[in-house]
Image 1 (cartoon, rainbow, N blue to C red):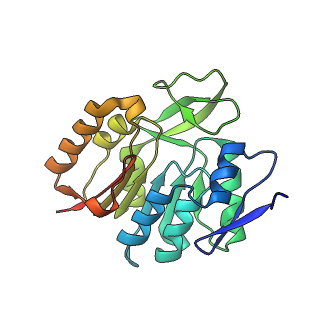
Image 2: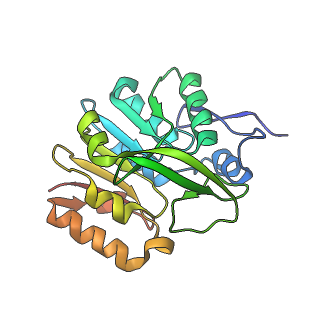
Length: 220
């Protein structure tokens, strides 16, 4: 029997429904969905932080942050309208009304042709080629988004565009960066370039919270 909802870390989430890809449902039921990011958020956020999440999907990481800093201090962006709809429902289920913008964040303002894999919510703007559908979604320049939100914590999961997006991001005022990396897209060389850039920008890795696909960085 399939349960419609699951509880992860005390947060109630929609798990099984026709509009949720099977692999997402499976991770939610196992309880390991975005576990490294959730652990980093739980371990590094302070109550006075303001959080910007780029790539929210079902909203679990945003909810984890909102429980620490308050929903009013979290702003999330998700380009896929199907995932954004579920995230908003999850926010409502937990009475944590995080502001979510159904849009991409990029280097410049414009429109992103988001290519979405069949039977998945994974999206790409050019690095990955999916034989699926293309969704035209608004795109906001990261410099303007960061200037408006003024976050102290930045959470990024952009499916392989991190090596372009992060160097274009103003880092003044940001204390903590939680970053999902995609070596299958940017390669080990791309990850190494990001690490050099972050170190040169005054950040140091939090080794205890870093994993193969998630890195946590704080001002050194």
